[in-house]
Amino acid sequence: GVLGEYIGRIYIETKARPKYIIKKVGQIK
Image 1: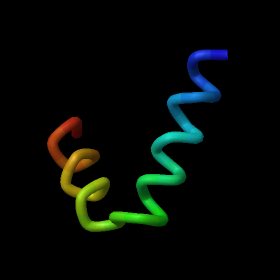
Image 2: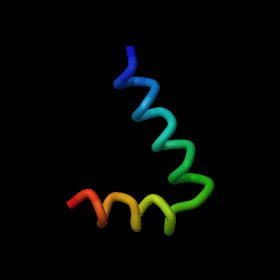
Image 3: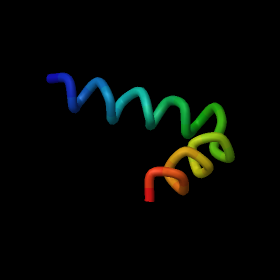
Image 4: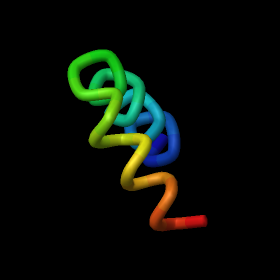
């Protein structure tokens, strides 16, 4: 589903750019 694709995208981006994702998650929280 959409959620699965979203999580998969985050997982791939986390592997490629961990610092960028951490920044994004920090902004959401």
